[in-house]
Image 1 (cartoon, one colour):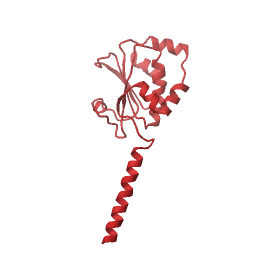
Image 2 (cartoon, helix red, strand yellow; image 1 turned 180 degrees about the vertical axis):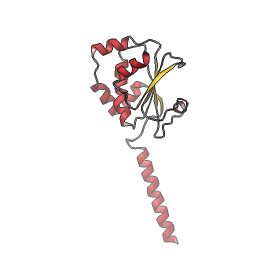
Image 3 (cartoon, one colour; image 1 turned 90 degrees about the horizontal axis):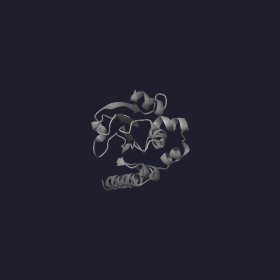
Image 4 (tube, one colour; image 1 turned 135 degrees about the vertical axis):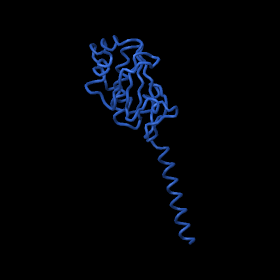
Length: 161
């Protein structure tokens, strides 16, 4: 019996130790509303993709014409490869319109956040980009889920029509 208890205690100890090591590893993720600067400084993959992406003058002109009242909420996971691919592109594109500042909401693996914003917006996949006609979020124009159908610019332009 003592041997069995010793084995259970030893296994439990190593399990707890491994959980603790995992929680403090590079696999940590952001959770809740996060700033663009925090995202780009704390998550190198997002920053690398942001730096590598470029937009043409024609694309900048298109984005500059988007309404000043446009609101974009971005639900994503810092652990999600689709988010790491698409969100830096969106952030770089939005630099062409100083009036549009997206709200970035980082989710856990269950697509949840501390303020339950994802639940209220019925988010099921990451990334989910929700485009609203106005900053009061009264008129949702549509969503881009996981990846755009054509490109982020074309898909958002379609929502604005």
